[in-house]
Length: 257
Image (tube, rainbow, N blue to C red; front, side, top):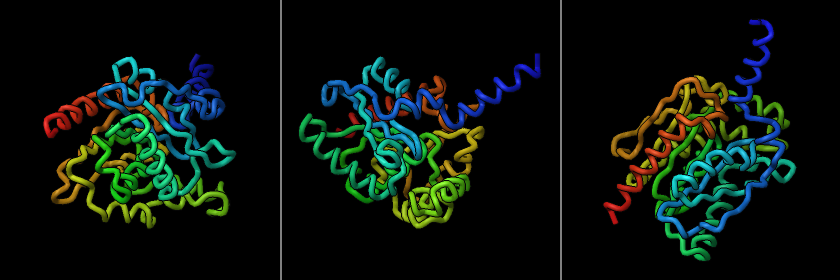
């Protein structure tokens, strides 16, 4: 019995780290668009990570909508026109332009952002450098490499040392992109939470943990146990903590208004 169960446990472990081939990578960016933009009191933008598609958010989207949130996500393009491999600043610029158009079209003034892995860095660049702080009610990241991650070296090797994609270089510890985000002060009026797991092999917990400087009072960390990198997007325990962050941020936003 132990021998027959070992391959199954390994498969589940690997799936928790990288996601299901069929459900995450095979579906592409085919999440159905809903007509709830601008119709809900609280709206959430979901940004997925490197070499994944927006399909990774399917469970999260269903849970958020069930709890009364408006939800939307973007096709971030990239390799084979579907995977998220474009440079972080370029994607942040693209998202900024898309968001302004969406806000004007649907009367959406502000929203929360949840970013997984690289998606959290894209969100930070948008908020810190492109005026996103006037639109964003809160930012919650799931397993994002705020200090860079050594596993990005695998991406550098697989993508021809940067010839196919520069994105892995930008997620290495000490990269120009990581340093720039760390050197800029994060807007104090935007609640910023990093949810991470010590079981995350793709983005180690030390790379996701925020180290706020003096004056950066809006930052906090939430550690979870036994959750792999991609599983952070659909684990029920993580969702409960995320929903708590959204609810608290919504209360703060209303009080300020």
